[in-house]
Length: 113
Image 1 (cartoon, rainbow, N blue to C red):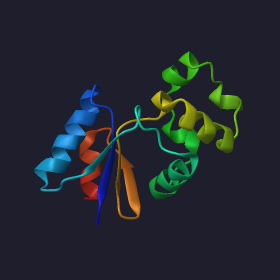
Image 2 (cartoon, rainbow, N blue to C red):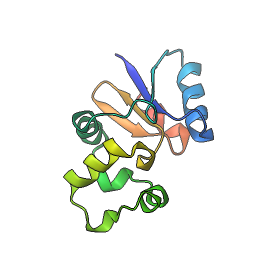
Image 3 (cartoon, rainbow, N blue to C red):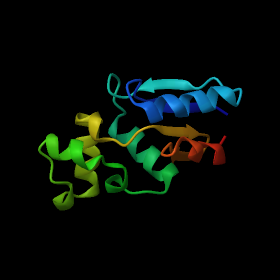
Image 4 (spheres, rainbow, N blue to C red):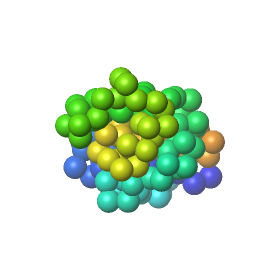
């Protein structure tokens, strides 16, 4: 089963999460989502696996800085905004098989590895 981490190497929580994955003996696929943003369909799949809606994984400060008013946007509009402004996506997100989790705190990922 492949493990994917949507990773920002400048984020300490993301680095800690990646280290936990590697300490568990796995070699994850690392997606630096700021350089290679997930598509709208990939975001929908991630949200399904997380069991969340788009609003749940928005970094509010970054959304405001991008000029987005998330409170007034539909789920589809938020997903589109995430694809266009990946900095608004909460990080890190780890996907393993048909499950996903946000690595905040990093130990959250242990439930799906």
